[in-house]
Length: 118
Image 1: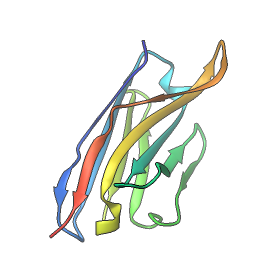
Image 2 (image 1 turned 90 degrees about the horizontal axis):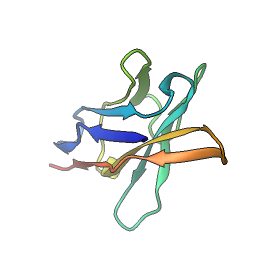
Image 3 (image 1 turned 120 degrees about the vertical axis):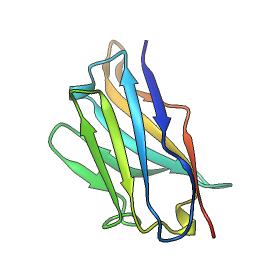
């Protein structure tokens, strides 16, 4: 059974930092595409950053501020968020994508809320 559990969200002042974590189980983490998405109030969910076995990509809005990383030995995905802005507020979701019997399939965590406010 695939499980993705995010943690690390909270309230932070503008300019502050947070580190999100995603604990994964039930699938082969090391060969899966792992990503972070976020959804701001009344907006669609958007990709924040993504990591495959050999590359990392991030949205233009977070480049230079957010860093995605993974620890394949621990089945953990991280998102280090620095210089946070109010527009970074939202629910952050961890997503796993890998090949199943039905083809490439996405699995989502339940999300962790980040609020950037003074």
